[in-house]
Length: 158
Image (tube, rainbow, N blue to C red):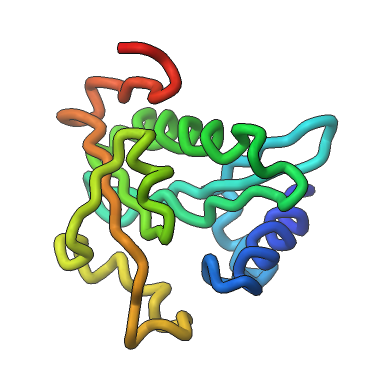
């Protein structure tokens, strides 16, 4: 509960720059159980959420790092934690909508056509100013049949 305000500040910093959707404090509290945070000495350095979309599909969303913590591997650590969380949930596929598909490619995500995602995924789009001209890139990570095979850490050799 104590991380909600910091999560909102980090997300909304990036939202103000057009990198992601704004989140109200109420929306963050509503979905707080979906969030993972990276912290150092009690300070939230970044956040990510894993939201279940369907029986075998979840979204990695609200990935954001505090401006002063960029370039320190916080985003990569959060993605790895989100993948691990999705795997523990038994999710078979994890997707994200992004402007930085190369970052996700380093973690095993592959670019897909957004139309492959179920319509349920697009519920947040109604709030987006770009909803009629969406330029986000959809990426997907296959976590293995029934989540049986954990994904390889992209930072470690095969």
